[in-house]
Image 1 (cartoon, rainbow, N blue to C red):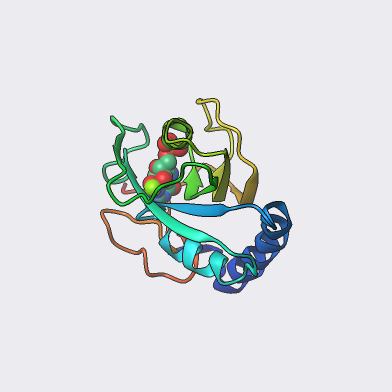
Image 2 (cartoon, rainbow, N blue to C red):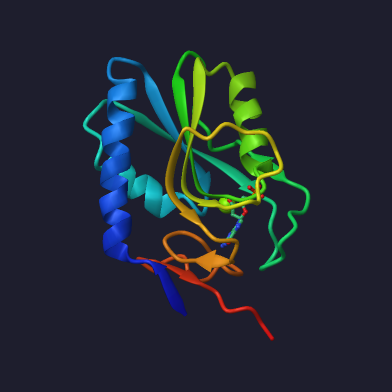
Length: 171
Ligand code: 5GP
Ligand code: MG
């Protein structure tokens, strides 16, 4: 598979994002909410670069099946999410594609009483967003290709790759 973003470049960019995010939340009660399962690598690396008090939460959302490019119905699973009432939330996901997932999750977190909800994604696909969701922090802009690695899967595989790679289209 063709490597799109090397492990070194990811780590460097995660450090830069931490430098941007840290000052925003100094002296504010912060919960970083990772979207399962794709954000787990990003979450683990980012929180270790932040030198501010924070809590970690997890939320489930799934819309994709295999490499289909149109999202199916979104399922939100919030059973694992700790109380976010009266806390500032930074919602963390692996990739922004159409925006459906993050739009619904942002609404859910507001409904749960979060003081504010900001969004951080590792990757944003160019020219794909159709749902109106404000993204506050972006790691990398990428072309419209199906990518795997660093948390991103194809049929639940390849998540463990330390880099981001392009999955070849089946011919
Ligand atoms: P959206 O709701 O923005 O259309 O889709 C976001 C979700 O779709 C991501 O959290 C991710 O699970 C999945 N997704 C979108 N594009 C890709 C991709 O290129 N590779 C992988 N592995 N997942 C993707
Ligand atoms: Mg996902």
